[in-house]
Length: 203
Image (cartoon, rainbow, N blue to C red; front, side, top):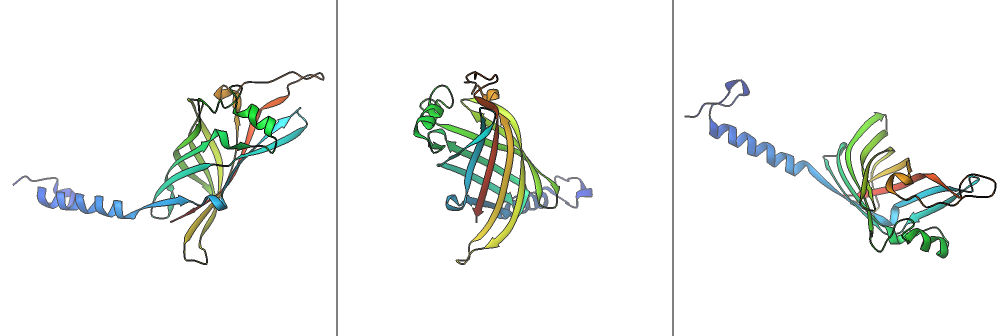
């Protein structure tokens, strides 16, 4: 008989294997996949123009895969993708410029992605989301502030979880560096981009 560490409470290898399989089964069974509800979610951004006002935009096509252990979102594994060609600022000429090689280069880089590395609780319903953001094949670490709205059921019995996300990135870190000087001094478009999102998932 192959004896194992009895301090773990297992007398032989068969008992250890059974306990190991039971643990893996329970872990798999407790893993929950959350599906993005696109009709109740939005991904937006704001950029200073002429350093005096904000121009707002959003992405119309995006997806997200989230897995948690039970309903504990601090265990969440998050993968997010947005189609860069779906950018919309309400102006066709500006949108065309954003899709061009000066910015997203959507023809050669159709997607921007985010993959989480950690979601840590800060206080109450506030969290810090850490991960890697990839744009135009360049990846940088980022951190977003997240507020957990809670979990509830809709009138059709679907369980929903809601989140609000805020953050700021510097676009030049991803080689989105196009700009133009203005007569009064300074630049036409700010390097800082504010990210705002309202996200709803269902299981």
